[in-house]
Image 1 (cartoon, one colour):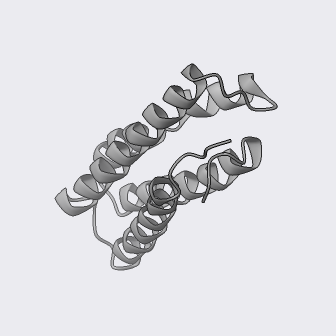
Image 2 (cartoon, rainbow, N blue to C red):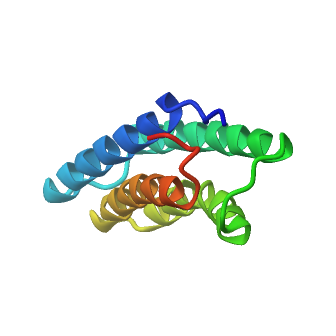
Image 3 (cartoon, rainbow, N blue to C red):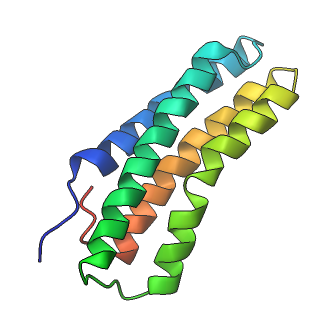
Length: 124
């Protein structure tokens, strides 16, 4: 059985953790969400869409995880997290907007690890 390229999931984990660290630094420095955090969220969003495309292609090719409904739920939720964080972070005009972005970065990394547990074909 072939696997989903491990570079994309690993990159998502690294980008999510780096984004979380940078956003926490911005929160500690009492800085609002700016263009740099928004751009980083955009990069994370693009990576998540690439991964969703790879997984959908694998599903279309006949691959099936043990829990298909859970996988589909994760595929729907994953791209929503950075979008919701960007929207919420822009609305929150205090340093806590950056904290929301930090949480989104951590959530993206955790979702990737969880996806690997649901379907080990997704190599991290």
